[in-house]
Amino acid sequence: MNYRIRCAGKAVLVIVGIGVLGWAVMMLWNWVIPALFVDARTIDFMHALGLLVLSRILFGGFHGHGRWRERRHWRKWNAMTPEERERFQAAWPSRPTRHVED
Image (cartoon, rainbow, N blue to C red; front, side, top):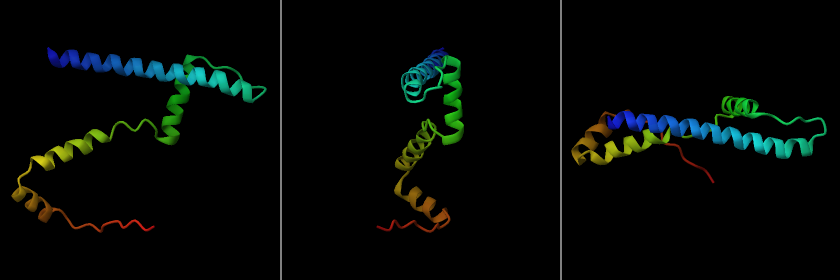
């Protein structure tokens, strides 16, 4: 039961977040673009959502999906004993390290 409530809460949060982002894009567009360009039109909410999707496709924004994986891997690493870490590192193929040059 608790799982269903959490899932429903997350779904509501996602829907509200999409709505707020769409509203923010619509307000910013209607405030800035018609003032800058003479023939620019104002947009409605659905066009603002379309702009959000287009920006996601073109620029790969909304970088929230990858960080949970990194935390999960660090939690696993921290839960390992030193012997398990050594075995893991020995089994891991050696990869060249990247050196950042100034």
